[in-house]
Length: 551
Image (cartoon, rainbow, N blue to C red; front, top):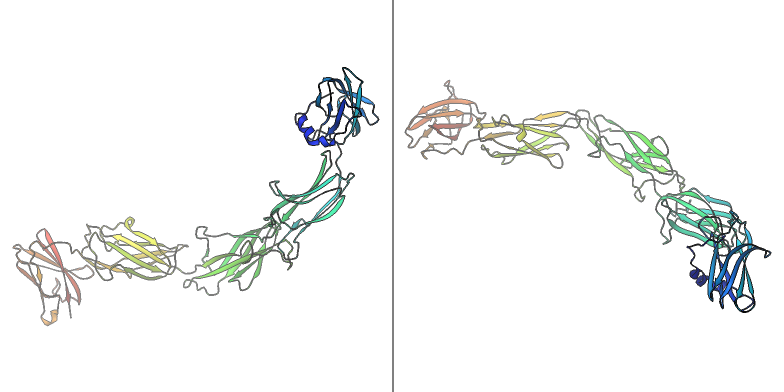
């Protein structure tokens, strides 16, 4: 049976292997050959067919047969007239519903010209479907570390193969996890055994990255038959990857409300995690409990000796390192460190055993008073960051709304608080009114501070006459002193309401033209020393003046 093979164009075959052809005895048939030879009719897609080719010096009737090694024909492959020139025919080794057995065969060519004698030519070829067998392959160690420390720096590859022909080839290739070639370690023909070493380098000489690799040992003969074997190896130069279970994943910190912190985390390495150690300030390392060796869970505790419950917090920096199961010069495995590809894990443990502590709060402008519509800006300092800080201006502003308070967190425990005094504040004037600032920590403990006080005066009201005069800034009632308020050109009756610094009403006076106050209250008793506010009401308008009483 004759079958064509589109994968082997006749012209290409003849161009490639013309030098392999042998001439026939006469002049009609010449340049006889076969390619590939040997071939491998095993349906693996490699050299499954072979082609016989020859040249004719003139037109002739051709009978092309396949014979056994003794020259006994058993298959007519092709017959018919062919012109002068080069010709080729494929045979896929198919005969009587099966492939022929491995062995030596012949192509027999009989050429019958129109005039002249019959000429015959023969060419021997081989069918071979058996690959050179791999008898033994050994790859060790299964995990190696090409880091130059003298231990496990290379991979040993040993093979034994049933090489029977000088053309039989052995290839040793390293493939990555994507089955892409990393390095051709070895290539030779006619070699039955060898011991090789791979130092972990790729084709450019750079050490390949950590990962799993496949070492493939392959034999291949001239017919394209192949046998292979291999082993999965782990190139590992890195210590374990480490992690810790943070109580606050946003701040990436461990915070506890006691003097002992129970810590947990994980460590991973393909070589397994042999041990995990923990230290404070890297001064003394101690081993902690480790769970599964493949993806290890670890647990340890850290105690704070300088913490004072309900009084003093403390922050400790904790370091964690791990050892994997890859052999190293010191016998312990790869460890995290400053020169390692995976650094030591470090994090803060905050022993939050005390409630927030207020340091100071200062309103912008110092002792200056504020007016309705003006924004009060307070810088409030606390002992730590991360507090929930609120401010209560309800004693400053009768229209206070907590939603109008703005708080922003800075660094080092600094919080900036802003609040705009309402225009309709009925508390005006109010002096030394406390602002309640509260800080709540991570565990819900709150501390309120009232040391900050502010004064709100209405200095925007205009005097309708433009002629109000207070004759002094201070006076001594016990020495017969008084303060006189001259109303200028105002012709009606005016009322003067007097308040102390706390905003408490002291006395009300009425009069026209001028009104005097002798430093007493509505009960006739002398008031205490301090600053007092004179709220002067003239019809629909009012003005506020300030005077000090001295005793």
